[in-house]
Length: 379
Ligand SMILES: Cc1cc2nc3c(=O)[nH]c(=O)nc-3n(C[C@H](O)[C@H](O)[C@H](O)COP(=O)(O)OP(=O)(O)OC[C@H]3O[C@@H](n4cnc5c(N)ncnc54)[C@H](O)[C@@H]3O)c2cc1C
Image (cartoon, rainbow, N blue to C red):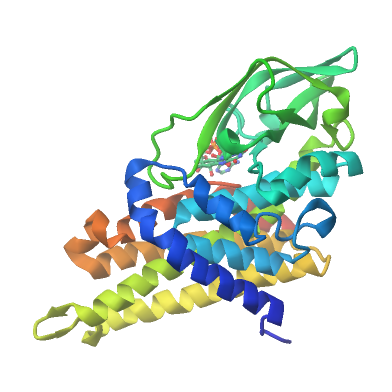
């Protein structure tokens, strides 16, 4: 067994860590307050060749691997959770389904602008009445004269305001009570397509979360991703990969909060000594470091399995579940170690704690992860 990163992975880690410290971390607090999406950060990530990192060079990608993707998400999230989720969704929800299920022509046309960063990647699955039960989709796409006419609503969709097109799920047919769900690529400037960006969120305030309204949106039949009725299977596969991204985000946010807590504990004096001299605080920091280490190993293992072309669904679920739950714990303890100052925005750990909560909800809640894991155990 070899736990070392490859030379290329180490180089990516070094590059993205420096970038995150210099270009992402400094404005994170202000962007959270202003709820400002940092388009310029993603332009710079394009220049670094990160926007198509795990996709082949034929489509403008960097031909790298899933471990490298996880490292980039982790490092960006260590500096700013909003930047981390934007990048993670861009690759794993936006780019991946096009790469996995698209025709050669679709990849050239739709994956390439994602890899170059010209378009951000997005994926429209969730609806007001179809969240955990994503099969409850109500959006309908009716095929008429070789065109799909789509009507419906999607909610909580990441990155859509900055996407030129996105894949979304819709009912394309019915067999009695059984729905045929397919994924269709829809240009965001299509007539009848409205993107609403006005959610008031708990955290991840500098990320773009949108509502989509589709009113008689027409797209060519050729925009179908894969075959009719494959949408359900496609999104399950897409979410497996996405969970590695959420797990990596959790490791990054937790790492960022832990580092701030450790530095503060060394600096802050009470009762004549540093907080880090009190065993109660030392034990908190020890638990935080241990849990982050374990979560990181789980995320990298799931990524490694994926890179080997092996089954990784259970491991991705376990990694996402564990990492997101320890991220909540670690960020909570980071606030606790900061005392009253931790409650103040200036110290940034409260932002990390707010950002962390989404990780227990998005791309399958903790309850859904436990169901996925239990099913893999044969329950
Ligand atoms: C910031 C943000 C970004 C997002 N980005 C995207 C995106 O880019 N694309 C996209 O498609 N979606 C996105 N989502 C949606 C997200 O994936 C869903 O919110 C999530 O899957 C949960 O669905 P729901 O909100 O409808 O909750 P519900 O499904 O209504 O769940 C509510 C509660 O009930 C529990 N529950 C549900 N069913 C069961 C069950 N069978 N057993 C036990 N407990 C159950 C859940 O675990 C949860 O605790 C995003 C959400 C947020 C908040």
